[in-house]
Image (tube, rainbow, N blue to C red; front, side, top):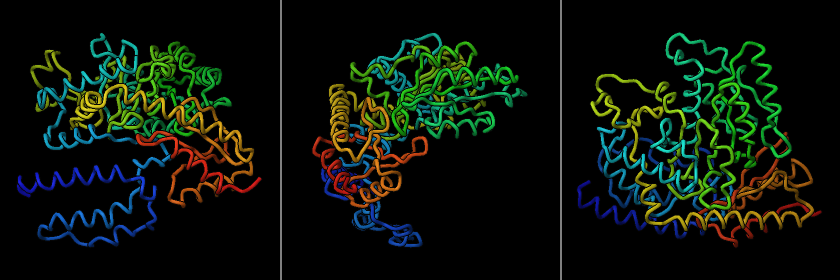
Length: 470
C-alpha cells in the first residue's frame, strides 16, 4: 500500500467507522452465526498476491460484521460496558501511526511522561488519595492492559513484600495465603495461580446478604491461618463485583490487613469510574488504606480498550517484584533515578502509547460528558428497578446503587434461564446470566455511551413480554 492509497483508504475507513457507530442500533445486538460459519465463509489459504481494498471491505461487511456481538449497541446490557468514543478512536489511530514502544523513558520520553501525567489527571478527577500521586514518596500509577493484569501485578508485589524479596531467590512461598470472596473476579484466582499460590492457599471468605465480604469471617480465617503457621499476604476487596456490583467494606478489611501486613488490593474495574461524579465518590471509601487500586476507563468512561488505571502506594515492592535490568535495557537517566521505566511496572516488556487516548478523550470530550453519562445510567437503572418492583413476576436479588440490576423470575431458575435465552435470541437486546448462591439471575448492565431511556424501556418491555404470565 502506498502513502496515497493509505490516505485514500484511511478516509474511507474513518467514514465506515462513523457510519457503523451511528447506525449500529439498526443491527441485531448479537450474531446468529453457528460455530465455524465465519471461518467457512473465508478462504482456507492465504492469498499470494495483494487483493483490492474493495474486496477486503466487502468481506468485512459480508462476513466479519454479521459475526460480531455489537458491544457499542445501545441495547447491549450484557457483561459490562466497553465503550468507545470518537476522540479515543482517533488517538488509537495515532498510536498505531506513531508506532512507538514506550517500554522505557529513553525509548520515547513523551510516552512515559504523558502517561504519568494522565494517571495524575485521573487521580485528581476521581478524587483518589494523595498517596497514589506520582509526586508522593512511595506511590504512583501506570496504565495496564486490563484489571486482570493489574491484579497480577498487585499479587506479585504482595508476594515480594511478604517474603522480603526472597521470592526471587530461595524464599518460601508455600505458606502464603490469599483471601477473597466468591464474588471477586475470576482473574484474582487466576493471578494467584500464576504467582504460584496453590488453590489450597486461597481462602474464599463468606459474604453477607448483599454479597459483600464479611469482615468477621475474614478475621476468623486470618486468625486460623496464623495459628497454623501460615502467612496471610494478600486480600482483594472489590468495589463493584462483576456479578452484582457488590461493594466490600474496605475500611474494615483494611484494619485486618494492617494488623497482619497483608497487601490490600481494591478492584473497581467498572464502578470506580462513578467517582467522576462527586455524588458517587462513596465508591472510594477506604482507598486511603489500600496498597493498590485499579479502575477501567475502557468500561464506563468511553476510552477504548485497553486502558486499566493501576495505582500503588508501595512502588518499592512493585519494582522489587518486576524489575530486571539486563545491559541492553539500562540507561543513565534511570540509574540516576531521574526517570520512570514503565516496563518495570507491568508484566510484558513492550507497551503501546495508551495514554494518548486518555489525553485526547479528556481534552476533546471534557469532564462534563463523562459525568452526564454516569448520572444518566445510574438514573435509568434506578427507574428500571422501580418498573421491576411493580411486576410481581420478578424480584430484584441484589443491591443496585449504580448501573447494574440483577433480577430473576419468581417462577425459578428454569424460567429465568429460559427468559435469558429467549431475550438474547430475539436480537433486540442482550443480557448475561449469573449465579448468586446457586440461583440463576439475569444481569442488566446499563452503561452504553448511546443508551437512552427508550432503549432501557424497550428492553424491559421485551423481558415482560417473554416472561410467563402470573
